[in-house]
Structure formats: structure tokens, C-alpha cells
Image (tube, rainbow, N blue to C red):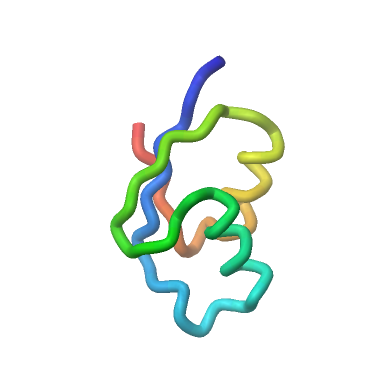
Length: 58
């Protein structure tokens, strides 16, 4: 399957708890960390939920 690289570009401080848990589930715990996840509908939904905190890298 295809993969997506996701980078956390903004701080989680002040974000609601559900968004913090979404970042944790994606493996993003520190600023500027990059993770590579499979391109699935569930991962796309997680990205959509925290789109203001992350950047998708090509």
C-alpha cells in the first residue's frame, strides 16, 4: 500500500484532548517529528481532524 509522511508543525498546547489523543495515535509526540503511515481512510480521517497542526509531506 501507499504511505503518507506526516509532520507535526504546530504545538499541541491548547488543543482539545481528542486532538491530542489523535496525534498520539498517529505517533506524533514532539514538534517537527515526521511519521510515515499507510494511506487508509482512517488515517485520512485522523489527518483531517488535526489538519491545522500537521503537514503532509510528499
